[in-house]
Length: 313
Image (tube, rainbow, N blue to C red):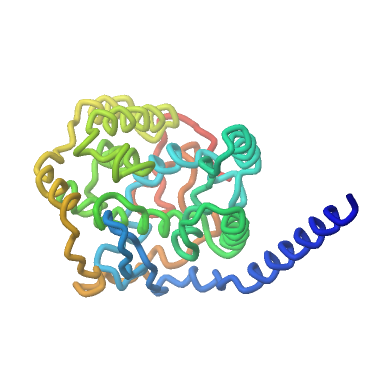
């Protein structure tokens, strides 16, 4: 009995050493705070092939935080990570619940990833579902929370999320689905894009499950109303609005059956870096909770809230 226990102990110690070395070799995150920062990551198309994708002002669809509507930011936060302003990169309670669920199901299906963790994964890690990758993800998320503002993290997250066939980032998503820039999105359109995030390829593909996407966007709109981001009149107007995405039905069907011809967004005109009024930030205060005034354009532009949620960290 002693030898098996010794082997297990040696193996566990070796694994901990491997983890320690892997974390020490993780890339720096401090340079992400630079508004001119640009890097290239690999993203996957719907046929499983990888393509280079530019992250930063070098991407023509890159949308600085100041041009993203508050409704878009809050729609994502309330739907994906309601404790975003309270945690330091990872949600301990959510992780415990995920571990319990995965042990019961004998799988690694529930990740309990925060917005910061998802951003870390998208920028630095692979998509493999392993304990090692999860540890790296949590470590990078914690470091990002120490080096970046909450608004900068949301900016990165929204600019790299998948929203369709080779459609990455809300800048591309807004043009692809609605033919307009992000700044012109209505509350319904913001909720619609946020509703797609859990599964834009199948479960929440608007061309296959439009009713499901609309139902989830209704839920997100209710959250926006409850938290005071939307007034009653704005909420009712948003509910009555039907996003016009039907014009792309054939286009999406074709892309599902035929590999797309990919052109890197960096080959088109470049979006200027956001070095103006939004270049100087106060740590973790870019998107204040509605109780302190919900911003409508920039990270710190206040408006009078309709209710008083307490979301800010």
